[in-house]
Structure formats: C-alpha cells, structure tokens
Image (cartoon, rainbow, N blue to C red; front, side):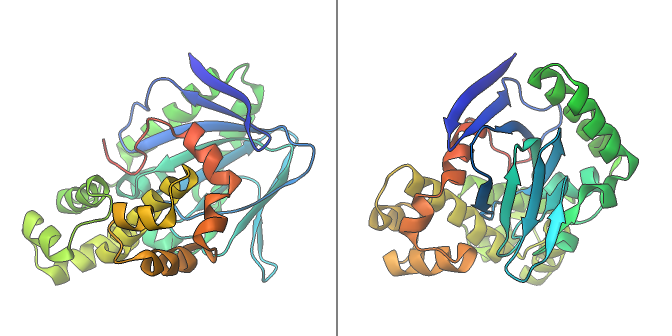
Length: 282
C-alpha cells in the first residue's frame, strides 16, 4: 500500500511507501510533475546521498550557472554545490542513502561525489537502464518502490560496509541534530581526533564537523519552512545567534533565511519524507 498526495505542493504529486526499505539507511519517494510550467528549483543540500531514477517521457536536467549540465537519472553528493533542477513532465523515484551505506549501494565512496552530480548509468551500468525500463512498465507506485528496493537491498548486501566506529559517529551526529563536539565523538568511538577525521572523511565524504554543520543546517531549514522565525530557529538549533544562522544558510544555499523558508522544494520534502529518517542507518 502507498500513500499518495495528489497535487499536494507546487504542482507535484508525491508518493511514499507505507513500509520502510528492507535495508537500513535507505528511504524512497516518488514524484510526478503536474505543473503547467517547467520546474526550476534549487537543490538544497541534505545529509544523504541522493539518487534520482527518472523514467517516462519527461525531461530532467541538473545544472549550474557555468553551463554544466547532467541529464536523466543521476546521483548527487551530500553538498552538490550551486545546482538547480530543471525539468518538464518529470516522473521519478528518488532514493536517499545514508552516507554510511552509500558506498555499498553505489560502488563509490561519498567522498568521490563531493560537490558533484554524476550520471547513475556511470555507476550502475546496465542495472540503471534496466531499472528505468521496469519503473516505466510498472502499473503502480507500490510496484515501483518494490522493484527499486529489491535492487538497492541486493546491492547493499554485497557492497563494502562502513567501519562500526564511523557508523556510530554518524548516527550520533544525526541523533544530536548536529549538536555534538568532535572531541566527544572521538572519545565515544575510542579513536583520536585525527583518526576519526581521516576515517570519517574517507567513508562519509565530509569531515565530522562539516557533517554536523550540514545536519544542523537541514534541521534549521525545515524549521524555517514550518513557519518559525529565524530568531527562534537559531536558538532551537544551537546557533550562536541569528546572524550565525544567516551565514550558514547563505554558505550552503546562497539564500537568506526568508528565501529558503519559501522554497517550494522543502515543502515537497516535508510530504515525501514524512516520518522517515533517511540520514540514519536504522
């Protein structure tokens, strides 16, 4: 059974499975563009590696101000840079992978995806094309989720796992919503700060402090979208003050807090990923 929100926000239909993925650290959602005008949305950084499997007759393009473009099914790293998503009649399944399982599922470490977007076919080869064909032929979102989850679970089961200490450190960052000191993380996992920095950066794609900053930013972004004031969000999310929040949002998105709060993509997110924790290992 699938929850389906018709025309819920910003001209998008959103589908999400009622049951979580069989593999921890993986979350799924489905999207269909119902807008009369082409989509043009900024890609907001998220503490998960994002896989978009586009199918059907629509067009999907990721690009930046330099003119660089990536078309079709793609994979975006934790902080893909100043990228926008443009498309028309887009239909896709989006997958959010905890960075501790991304290497196993994708075949590359998250560090190799830093500040970039790559074609899914370059990582999965024939598996990507086969999945697109299956999704296009499937009669329902429930079937599409089952097909996608089966492939993801199989790939995760055969890929290299992250070290337990790295997993523990990542989960601690997520649970604390980014409000944890690197010194405390190192002590909890029994490593030196230097060793934690090196292993974490290699396997997650960001240093621990940067990862915590990203998790805190995303938490703040959704609080702003929910209508809370920037002053309240700054206090709630552990920023030194409102100007600190402003600087961090500007660094991640190039936006002000008010502009970010009005971003329709975040409103769609709140429906698509309601009740899920895609950044955790589970």
